[in-house]
Image (tube, rainbow, N blue to C red; front, side, top):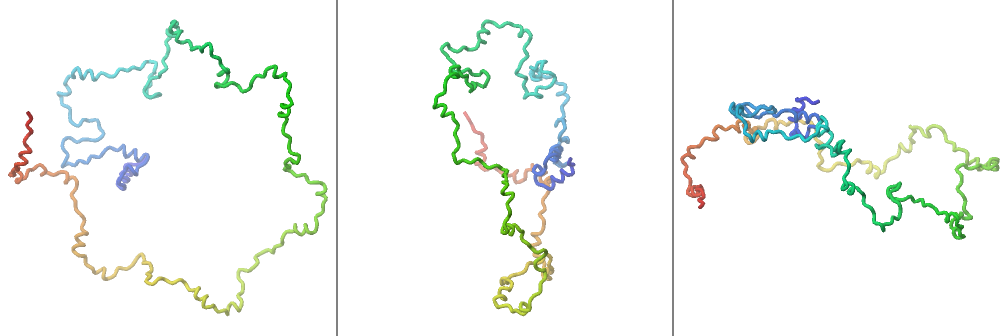
Length: 318
């Protein structure tokens, strides 16, 4: 777990602490109490500590000994608890969203009671009209559909087949030139097993002979003609390296010496003025201005112009 020093270090190094903190470090940052920005020059009244339960102003003895009015007594009455003892000791928000179970427990008296004729009449399901005729028996042993297997009647079982039905029921025969697929394992005939290979097949079946080892040494002697050869002007022109552009300057070294002229230079008054850091007063002195409510002598002797006096007059309404 991150310590307070690490959290303070992260807060100082980054501008937005909420953006850099993640996980437990963010929880530690949010759990730290707020630091007071007040100083002894601007702090008025008692010292307050963030996070406690103390009141800002002390409560007087008269307020402690005062008797509440009937209205305050009425507002102080707690809300009635509508929960029953059957809900248990656990709170409502444990197993639900703040409400008791909709399913109520039926009392034994209600279980032994007899229904009235009106209740019996309302509980009777609706009957279809006399002219209604159902095509199929639905919802018997399925989800609303009847079985596709139909019951064959005895007359249909004793009926004789027609020639057309026999022709249609006959399976389709393959083509006369049809050959079945060849088996995966080919059976070698006895003639093929007793055959003798020809000289041509033996020569083709013989593997290619290759010598062992490297075909050429890594170093080989150069001939005298190659040593005495002279390159042509074209070869010399092609062998020349690519030249640099006119005015090309090589890259400057990382570390170079400072010239004597640069060492002996004297900064101008303008440069010295610009190099001075800006000195600003602290926020404590800026916020606390003891002369904020002092009226100047010129303001005391000033007079309002007629236009301001006219605007300062209250509006008269009849």
